[in-house]
Length: 125
Image (tube, rainbow, N blue to C red; front, side, top):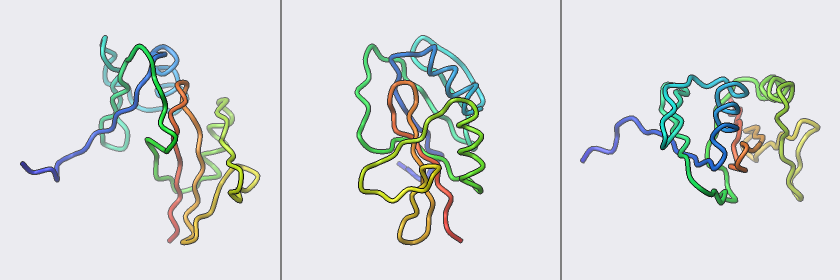
């Protein structure tokens, strides 16, 4: 089996109406289909399946993230749509919630309606 094929991502929702609005309207992902089992989007040429479940227990870690060219512009755009960015005790984050890693990557976190931890990353040159 060749596992070097196109990967797809999965997150779960117990709130499909809110998840559909969030991923489609707030994040602007391309909706492919909404089935009884999953809401399917296209993001960056890859498939994202938002699985419909009776209950969701979000992982404490980041489950999905996007590489961005200008993290502060993306944060401003999402905040204008009501997205709140997370702050973590003990991490030095700027006024927008951006943490700069030791190699210089800039990262910010936010959650979807089910509490799945998502991120934006602007990689250092």
